[in-house]
Amino acid sequence: MNRFLLPLSIFIVVVGFLGVGLKLNPREIPSPLVGKAAPDFSQPHLADPEQVFAPADLKGKVWLLNFWASWCSGCKTEHPVLMELAKSGEVPIYGMDYKDQRDEALTWLRRWGNPYPVVGVDEAGRVGINYGVYGVPETYVIDKQGMIRYKQIGPLDSETVANKIIPLVKQLESQ
Image (cartoon, rainbow, N blue to C red; front, side):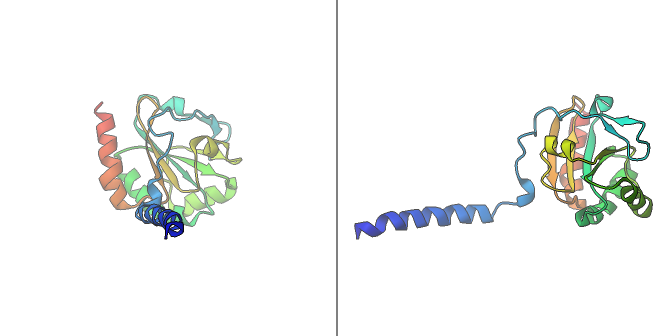
């Protein structure tokens, strides 16, 4: 009887961890960067490679950084949500074209619309690595001091924007 207690105990513990894990939302993986300074970068603009996009230029503003690519199906899913958010003027959305071809990205934006005042180019994926990007799309809320306050893994939807992003942006803007 005693020889079965140890395997049974281990089995019960494993089943408990599995049960808890299955109830978690994979889009809410905690990021070690939330609450820390957004990694700095200096990347060329998608539309004009002679110009540079850097977070330092946005200090004093609350803004979103959206990693996307023309080859990304999830990006196409979230794009109408980004277009609506940009149209609302609630918060500026800056894009980071991730591991993409410049001409394909420009064609994609012309075809589907451009919600970004500026799009940086992360052709090698180094900025994405610094931000802990798992895969595109990913969106970050960055506060006036340049701190990451929220990370969305996967496509944004209207519910997430209305219930999480906009209330957080309003709170951060009032601080």
